[in-house]
Image (tube, rainbow, N blue to C red; front, side, top):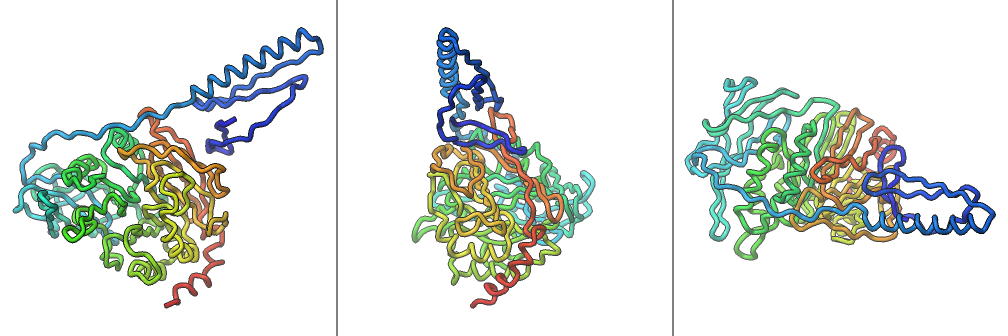
Length: 486
């Protein structure tokens, strides 16, 4: 019988083997109600007399009927929701739209926005008091064309140096709305919100509302942002949708397959994505906006590209080796990696799509003692044990697939059976994750399902860093050997 059970905190869904339990003088039938996770225990007393046996038999039949009905009436996941429709924006053409921020090196933040006015300046005024701007910075701008579409003027301005853990007020272009942002802390604790494959549906809005209730410092998105899919104005509506959150906390993103949008000969891949969502690739020594790294508090985060060359002779692989060679685990005890196509995936959707990248890069990331790897692409949630080379490994990475942000394609419901040994928890529901790193050795991960618009914490676990478990020291020779390879 399939059911929910709780084991030291997390609620885990398991598929139990069928079995026959003989009646004893006191037999117990347990049924896990999948709607409210409440265990119902029914005791059946057997008696030697035939009449009592007949009554017991009827009672057992009745119980089985009730349980069958209950199983059939298990929680039915809500269907995908429609795309959100946005009203026409009547603000002046010089006013900032689609404002979002990202980390841009130590103590610096990049402010990005769009104006319809091609002459609007790329300046940001900012300070620690509302309407009182002590500082001013000027940045760069770009624009792009896509068949018949012409983007507005896309501004990118870096501000700083900024104080850690401080609230700043800012204004873009010298007019319009005042925004506010909070810089991340300089040390632990630090909290990341994580959600991939967002899209622009009613479920996306629900996910964003739940993330807004989280006291997080940085949002990380492992690919598939707008689901524009060649329809360029959807990039604009996505920017409007996420602005309330993305203008207040840094959003660090990497590309997914829906960002490619290439038209052979005419339009390069990722033209829209690279123009609008500039990340700190130059600040981290990368030559491409598709892969980069950044530090926040005591964490080093690497964002990789699933849809650009990644083999051992590629520019991305060479950059990754260089980046890892500069990581100091005393200064940044935690090492996280994000990319789009998952390497460990027991869902039937997108099986094997990350295998080539995994074959090329997993040995290097394992030698570097990566703590957690986040991916998207599969529209469901799954968390693994520490794993390497397909097997449970105490010094491997925890892999978390979280491509359940709210996309319009729906959820991926079908999983492989039996569940692999490395897979701990898996469920096809929309939601988001929160990763609170408490100190250099311990972090708390929780996944929150969007259940009828209420955030429900469905999976949670304490994770010990590989530095804390001794794996970093144990594998230091292995890492040096790989880094020295040509």
